[in-house]
Image 1 (tube, rainbow, N blue to C red):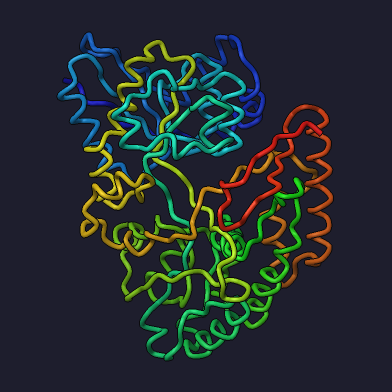
Image 2 (cartoon, helix red, strand yellow):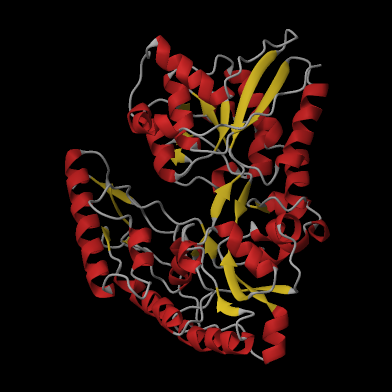
Length: 474
């Protein structure tokens, strides 16, 4: 039997201009455009026809960290299934745009991994994906506890279920160099206000060999941990009770980071570093504190094996107490294309990926954390390695999805990070501008019918999904 081809998407440099239009349009495209997209998604090669009479189901993923395991289970499926052949394809660049373009050129994969909340809503409303309610089986519901993991705007819209998570990525943690902390006799701070002094002490002891803290300034630094620490203090960008955006609570975080930059306690060059170089510097022992979510468990043991002893600690909060849930991300889910010609077979593949046997190997391999209590009890936790350090936080939850808007100016995460920098804009001015631009955009887009205002009058930051959600058109 022919094995599935493993493809990697090439860059989309000349095609980015059409991607936004592709996501919001439908219908046939010109033959030349079809050929252009075909060249992009296949790397210039024509796909070979299946050598058997099996139904071919093409699956796209943007995950690389689990590729060894997924290749193994795909090969096992192809060897044992008598009527379906899987073509498992890795796309590593501009994933959501590529899905949009493929859908609009008639070349959509049958299945693909879950996408961001914004893209999920766009894909659903523009007919790129289809709900899977009618396919859900009792066994699948039992293993994945479907009814307990329905998140409006994340994997469901109204009563339509589009994908089901088989696992989750934890919220962020401080990942620290235990050797440095033991050497200096210090502890990981629980209060945000104590962080600059700890970072400064580490930097002074390092004398140029190691520094207090590092940020991946070019790879979403604000959302790596600052936003999550704020969540644990009950602070979110969107005020669910009042139904409006409010960034005021982030001020102490911006001031703290500015202080550490001013103290020269931040690893040199952090402002322009991407995440992998940050990981390397931590792994080499040149940083006291790094921060990220549970993917670091495999990164620091397999991709960039740490040369130092490292530990994992809870993020600091404003007063050392947890007053809100830290966001975790459901993952390991699969969306079904609205254009698949073989929905029954596509569902059979989703069912296989979400089966107890496949999830058990996936979770025990440390590729994700269990999201269902059923799988939590099925896995052997002695096999998950350092992933165990990120598990079991009772203060984590999937937060309600705030209304998606397109404000004038910077994205709030970029703007807040830039205000952290010593030469950045005024912190007060940045927050005031974001409050204005985001709420202006929300008012405008609610009035236009492009989105709805979410209000949870009885919202509790510690139990974010317990309140009554209202979606208002004013």
